[in-house]
Amino acid sequence: MAEYTKITLDESELPTQWYNLIPDLPAPPPPPLHPGTHQPVGPDDLAPLFPMGLILQEVTTDRFVDIPGEVLDIYKLWRPSPLYRARRLEKLLDTPARIYYKYEGVSPSGSHKPNTSVPQAYYNAKEGVSKLTTETGAGQWGSSLAFATSLFGMECEVWQVRASYDSKPHRKTMMQVWGATVHPSPSEVTEAGRKILAQDPDSPGSLGIAISEAIEAAVADPDVRYSLGSVLNHVLMHQTIIGEEALLQFAKVGDTPDVLVGCTGGGSNFGGLSFPFLREKLAGNINPTIRCVEPAACPSLTKGAYRYDFGDTIGMAPLVKMHTLGHDFVPDPIHAGGLRYHGMSPLISHLYELGMVEAEAIGQTECFDAAVKFARTEGIVPAPEPTHAIAAAIREANRAKEAGEERVILTALCGHGHFDLAAYEAYLGGEMVDYDYPAEKVAAAMARVPEVDA
Ligand SMILES: Cc1ncc(COP(=O)(O)O)c(C=O)c1O
Image (tube, helix red, strand yellow):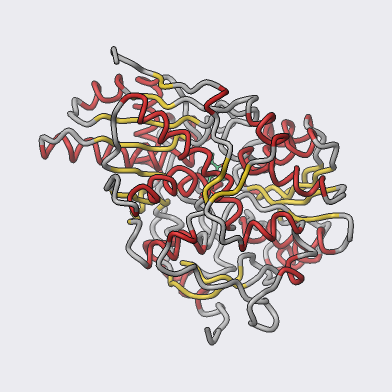
């Protein structure tokens, strides 16, 4: 093939199945436990939160799950998404590495999140649910769910983490354009929010707090369900459409990645890109290194403990075995709001324990430095979350240069940063700070993690 920049697929090549990694693993991840009884949760325990269609996907042992036709039709609004070769960035870095990025910012809300918000809204609508509640950190997930519910004629109520509610007012407006109601979190409208505000009236919020509020609102009404934008098995499975497309795109140009790097908040864009490649690795067809990248201010994988903890701050969500910094740990307000989660997807945590994925943590100044280099060569202004992935890709490209090796690097550019310019303003104005690892705050939060015999 001649010098290509963008590798595209035709709509007719859109994959028609999601991939479920779990049956291909030596053992499944440990089960979620009921927050009160500490016994494994069954479908009935989850029914007040999720529709049965998604509960069954959460526990399915099928390797592949058909994507419903109605979901595929909506996916075609932005999918297949392009895979780019970052030739201009490679040139700037003067590296022998070949850098590829799969760009998910082409979706209506600007990130990978509609890959799961659309099927989640679809399965809820099919079971007669009239409204979904959710949390949002960066505002990307809330706007993606607002977009999806608008297509299915459902209501949507979003708790947006206070730090991002204040810094990204236009994300809120975007959610309202799609018909959603938006509250800053912690809010006065839930008991969970009021409890946090009583302890700390200036709380910047956290994903864990916003999840508690959205769950409380959902369980209070039998016609309402809750929707989570990351962490759970079915969410990661929906995102595998990214990796399935990328495999086809690599095949088109006859190349193979040696290293995959992706940012991890709850693990969904990383899992979505990497799981199909991991399947091919387990089958002995390819052998890439697969690495998670997390913020130094919230390093659940590299510094957290692998144990059962609550998925939310108040302790209403099931206990899951994951790398955690403690369910009531409130990370410093880094700009990558979507990476400010105290835990990690249990599936990614399990892979990390099995040694199937690696992890590294990077401070936000290095990330924005990388993002500005990227924007000035490739043109796209990345969302704060994938700046971590770009910084890791650049580290890898520099290592390839030192070693004089032609390494092939693949990363997920999982969203654009058009609503995140305040972060770039801080960086360009020299006002961005790096937060040290908050060892004392984490130790205090870890002391409140429940003891579970499992
Ligand atoms: C653009 C973007 N990337 C990444 C993330 C982190 O989530 P995940 O690890 O599930 O991809 C978020 C979360 O809000 C996000 O908005």
